[in-house]
Length: 247
Figure 1: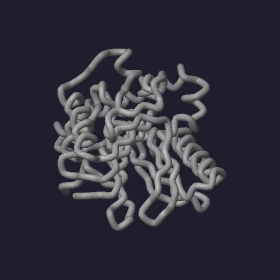
Figure 2: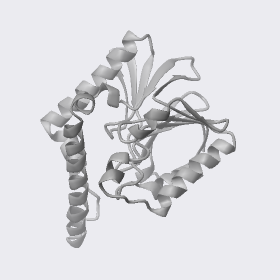
Figure 3: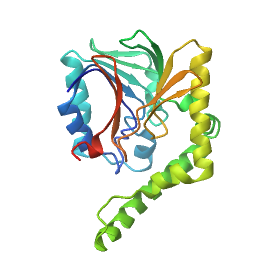
């Protein structure tokens, strides 16, 4: 499928739970004029704790570079997990790959969007990094528990995948409140700056919705949900759920 633009975030290369192979499948089947990597593509935090780098993670980097060489405009927006790149910004690699902290995006309809990973609007990440890192370790623990829980579910004949980490994110009051506050803060910033919408990642929750007349769009992640935000050549916005695309 060919799109005007594809937005992906939170691949977390360098971690055990990165769905790099699924992302490669997605990239093989989908082309675009523009590819926006909306932060946390490489997980520097996890790599510092324990170095994990599968061949598929190298393949993702090579695939992205190949797309840039073949004419796709690639924009790498840094996130908190790949903040080590921020010392080099702005950085232009070749003719078509740019690394930056933020970007403007103009849609086919002429609407203007602010593109950011979103960590700059997360008070915990910005003011209490130790707490953010602790939360990241806790999230990894939940992902480990997911594997164990689903192993036993299959043993009892329950084949449908269930995510404890997603359940916590969607149902624990403090988590739901954090996500709602995060979305509202981003929408308020976009409105104050005169944008029509905001495109982000960071919280691993794909979404397209209106918040106070601002179009809020989140590309999700490639750790659990395997989602991408796309604008079609006709100007339609969609979330692609690659985890269930064959269902």
